[in-house]
Length: 396
Image (cartoon, rainbow, N blue to C red; front, side, top):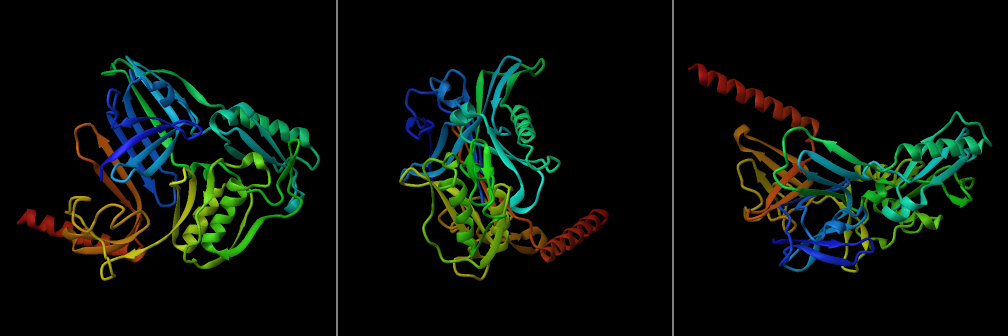
């Protein structure tokens, strides 16, 4: 599966190909991962004399990984950080811990809590909206000025980081730029769940309609509800994410009730996903939209139809029947056979990381979730037994 790397600007227009690209500087390394319930990450290293340096160091632009066989998108990442190295000095700019919209809630319970939002409009325009919840229960009802002060103080505290750092006497071999990014699930990590109706008058947020954003439905629709009400079509239109949609219908998961308030959307998704034995990710679909997808777990353990068994001495992913995306993907429940220990365990695929280097084959690294308690005990017993055998053999 050959991959390409494409650069897009903030409105998702294609700027150029980084890989493959005739007459341009190609990345010396591209590493990315996709995760079942977490924000995926990308790291790209490129020489500093690339003609595309301005685009690559613009926070909020996008790097797209493309499957060259069919021009489909493997994954897409928002540029969050760039680091320039020259001599013994590094300069970096970083928005990964940055927020530009702070909601501060004062004293009270239920719908009686005062809530204000303070925003850095220039930052929101530049790098997209990133929200933070400031719990200020010690602020009495009606003390809106004090709530504003708390929120403004938090905004000042989380200004974008950046600056020069001297790394010591070891010189950089060449001037390079390292670019880091996150998948669009980042939007869910940077959005707060607000109770209905969550409309804004000035900087005061009205939450007097409901104490919680509560829904009872199939777990997939519960997840889509929070994406819809806080990213796709929120009551406060300024919180909407451009080109963000929910996927269509899927076979329903178990029904549940969830009540969300003031945590991030991603925190709620994690809880719902664990209850439903499901995952999720945000893809870049054929209509150039960010599409939130729910991923039900697929059982591919030994003995099932289409079983996938990873053996501890197999090369990955070249073994027949174990091709990435075609035969297995993130979220699949597969069998891991540890041949030396004579133990097999069933584990979900939590993460797939791929690395491209110049003139080298693709490298795949697969991370599995922690096995259940019984399997962990079996693994411990097998390791202890194997260690005893090795020790006895060494003595003999």
